[in-house]
Image 1 (cartoon, rainbow, N blue to C red):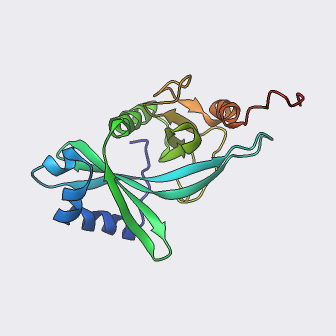
Image 2: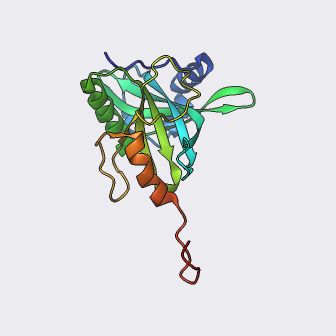
Length: 196
């Protein structure tokens, strides 16, 4: 398999397992699919979730930060929900369960990435200002998954639903997609201001 899924921090995995083992947490989760499953559930495919904080137009690497780890929750051979964890001053803790379109879209993008035939370290990259989530395929498979910078040859696969004008599930090299994001994230000039 060309995808080299990084191991999640052990406390993050333990926090998800504890949440799955708690009938109260599962019952109160806003995930009908998770609540309706009878049988074992397992957290799989841990992906570090990085947030794109800002794009620097000067051509230097965009600034990202690790925001958490996401696990796909499987029942048998299908994902029924996802679980997010976050880092607190006391360590990794369970954040919440969820379901929705990004769940199936993530699985589809992972299958796409496997079919590419190149070795990648899969990560998720969130662009909050655009309500956008991408599968980030980092070329350095031995890199620390909690750190790292977007490299020009890394691949981003926008997940569905993608923002208008950006095709979901179409792989882009970072060098090609970041200029589009830069335009989208740049503040528009005021009508009364002189052109720069």
